Amino acid sequence: MTRTITGPTDHVVVVGAGLAGLSAALHLLGAGRRVTVVERDPRPGGRAGRMELGDYLIDTGPTVLTMPEIADEAFAAVGTSLRDRVELIELHPAYRARFADGSTLDVHTDGEAMEAEIERFAGGAEAAGYRRLRHWLGQLYQAERGRFLDADFDSPLQLLGPDLLRLAALGGFGRWEAQIARHVRDERLRRVFSFQALYAGVPPERAMAAYAVIAYMDTVAGVYFPRGGMYALPRAMAEAAAEAGATFHYGQGVTRLERSGDRVTAVVTDDQRIPCDAVVLTPELPVTYRLLGRSPRRPARLRHSLRPSSCTPAATAPGPNWPTTPCPSARSGGAPSANSPTPVS
View 1 (cartoon, rainbow, N blue to C red):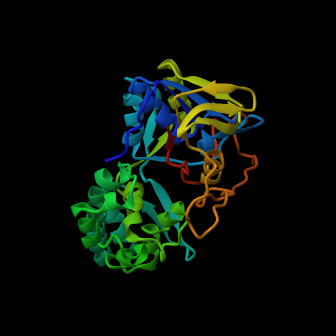
View 2 (cartoon, one colour):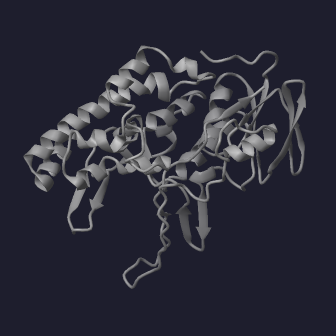
View 3 (cartoon, rainbow, N blue to C red):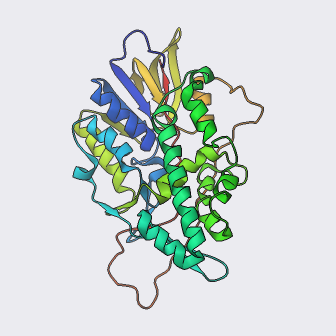
């Protein structure tokens, strides 16, 4: 159970128009609030942004979309849907893994197709291990989805309960890599089902097995590519929010928050002062703490992340066989890194 803000909450300012801020805006609009979104960049997207280089459009963050139903919940809050606004292409295979020894593995989210591919790649015993691994990943997701992934907490004590025991029984507090090794022995396969720890910036051998739910999303639940590139998602979210009545201020950095007692009464940007009843902060944590005027209670100092932890920089140049017409979208690998919204009364 989470705390409820007392007093008026009619007008909420959302700071940041990344995926977290846009989702918060849509849900607030669906709850009947008046919403203003302030974004320092000239367009929405945040880390799921877009760069224009000549005739090329480059997605600067995530490459593909998993768990589209979560994004659809935000659209549904204002009476629309993700698929009405974004064309999603389910990828078969989701991707191809290529190893240093020259071997390749097509990663399918369909169970039968993946089992057959693993049998070709590493033999029948590993295919049987994959069946067990897939079942374990599904159990892990079911244990975490409603109680941990889709829940808010104001105290660590709220984590306690039968669901925590169930997660422990599944080995969720062991090491991710060790849990994968219980099911498949081939080192290459272990990498396929554990490299996703890098999305959270943690080596697989150090990551808790509870994070393996990311591998479920990546290898079981389905992988999609939005037509036009990943930027199609934040663009559609911003359009839906604007149609539902949200006001957007782009190109404005937030400099400070005004308070009255324990309430935030206004958001001050480079250009204006915006009165409000509440604010939702979605920037990087160091920026959030600076605006709040607080320091976190942790031994390690908070630092800005220079780039998404799983991002692989890439450069492209036209070759002799490239089409002469502009490419609709060029993409670099990476994982969404939007921070969870921080509501402030």
